[in-house]
Image (cartoon, rainbow, N blue to C red; front, side, top):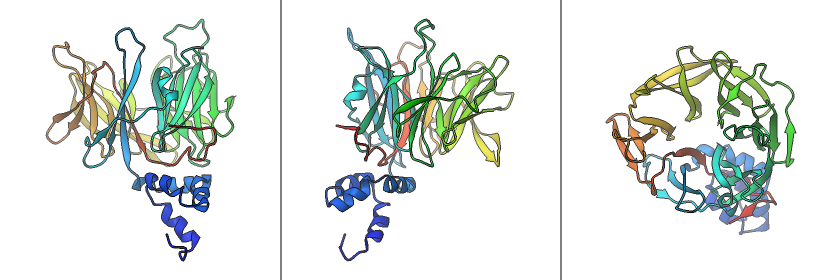
Length: 361
């Protein structure tokens, strides 16, 4: 940009540029690097997220013969041409070293993966920005005591605070311990206020949208949804229609989606949660036949992505993109095939760019 353009105008222009361009522009001058690395600029740039490319990350675990599980991933640009093109992102070494890694959340361009240290077996998380190839390790993630059943994992949530732009990890154990990690402080703290008033069992990970984390939950007598406000760190219990018995949570656009399954799992009904002031309600969007299928995510345009099992059940499931108008399934070529797929969306952002203790790769 010309030196004749006032700097504040340059700044306004750069707030609207692609992440890839801004990373390159950091080498133009010290002034530009200082600006682009600043937390204020990064937060302001994220407000234009609708202009940034969106991606869908398909992750899955595969265990080669006589080897440990390996995390594979494929990335699709989430636009009108989806599911093309496709790329294979380079995973940072911090994620490759995790034992049994799982994505526990995606928020404002950051992905959070949880696993364990292969040597100490301690819980470990990695916050990863694939757009700028930076990651940061969060060690000593709280886990269940050793005497708890091995199947009893904690529940997790990950979200970036919409006010402070500070990433947070939430861990809830079976013994109702509520812990939150804030990246800016680098510390875990116990939550003691605004906790659920009833004992509940939560899903493994939460869906994040609109500054809230949402878990599907079960109390002694019925199913419900538990939310966590990432800003003020308070919980709330949300009821849903009594007719919905079998379901899981997902994200559709910027809304919380509830995926209802029939008793025989031969159909799926998609509901979205709507806000009416402080009240929340669920509106039915559509129902599709899914005799051998389950919805695992949605594209930015609301197209369901499903895991499909053949009638004879002799082959491993396929991952497909469902075309609502033609009812045709477009198969995503995944190799090697596995039993379970996980689909997470993220947009390109600059978060983690200015963190000194991040690792680049």
